[in-house]
Length: 188
Image 1: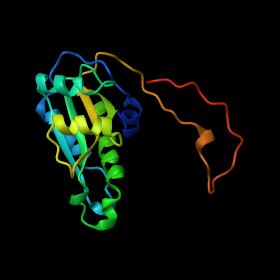
Image 2: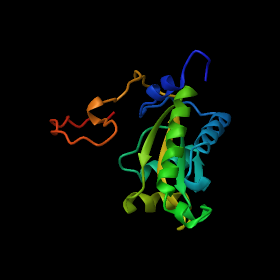
Image 3: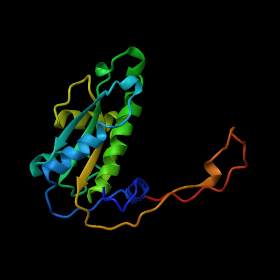
Image 4: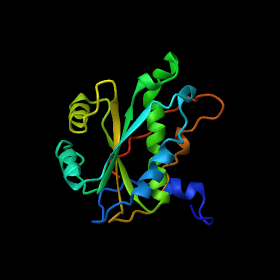
């Protein structure tokens, strides 16, 4: 991060990027993303995560071919997996989803800070997605792919933004409120 930008700048700059330049992501940047992911908090410091990094064009093509809603042209993917057996106590094993989600979010924010684009492709809890990802990447049964971060240099620019909504904030106690009209769904 540069001195002139704040952590909030990078958080607000984190956007789902689905179009990428035909440019390889350097290994050192991928390793920085992994360092950021592994700096995430974890229940009882259990660190139940494991990662599969995919950078070969052929491997990316095979992975994409099994993901109906994730056929973006990213040159790299980092699959965030949970291995509850790595947890250092029984209670911590129950929190692998939260721990791996925190790792994924750290990775996504770090990507924005490194000038990369990324998008979180959901895998868990859908067996119809888990099984093909597991098969293509040779992931053992005791390890579950939570999600995939497609990573690359963005071929699209999206302005920073927040989704802050004061209506969804409750101070001190939960306040029952009259429901608002639903917003139209949109993909961002």
